[in-house]
Image 1 (cartoon, rainbow, N blue to C red):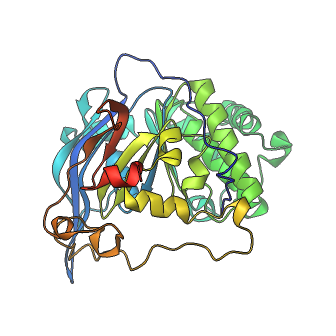
Image 2 (cartoon, rainbow, N blue to C red; image 1 turned 45 degrees about the vertical axis):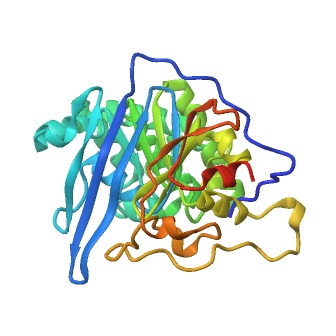
Length: 349
């Protein structure tokens, strides 16, 4: 688990990202799963954009399903996309054929999975698996593919890459395996990378190394990066903006520094309060009361209302829209939105 000294450090605003338009534009996306217990509504009207050179941190319930839908690897059935658009460079990927999606997947959009050990083939060397990207997609010979693979391993800072190219996944540490997954994602120099919990099961030191590496490569390649995580502390120094999800809906969006210093949704505040702090050694960690909702029976109104300390009658009957967040003088805060009837009490309280 990541520890942040929130009394001494709030992420500074990163440089603004320029471009001709977003790489990825997700619009009103709805995804559900048909199960024996009923229809689980996993994604409920998600909207966000990612531009070249920009990092979006995504946290909460529904984030991984959204990523799988973007990549076109969602199991259907039981999954079903009921509504929405996923525009990549202006083209709706949901209207593409499987062949058209395959041309984008890997080449233009790549994904780093959270469990490197189960994602890598245990009976093939890492060199063979890296080289396959170049052999299949670029038609390189085995010799040339090996050279490119060693270059990639060097780039993600795996020591003695030339000597370790013939090693198997189990011969690498968890951090080194994750670097191999990053190398595979980078192989074809995609425009956008989706990293799904890339630091899961890694200790804090290795987490920091992996995140620093991702940030460095993202700047070098000017890629868009979607960083999916359950731990807001992981994205503190990497993301440009953050989208917090609850019960399949985005409940808050904000530039990273703004979200950490002034959360505008009670769920976000609860997540931040749950992060261990250096100035609270020996104290009991805060935990959000109650349990996450059953997605087959999402409560009426705001899904977070049964657990929210600020909930009132309107919260139990009306779903709050993701509305712009403003200062007390009414000035709209750029990039900020909150799906809470009482966000003013949260941000200004």
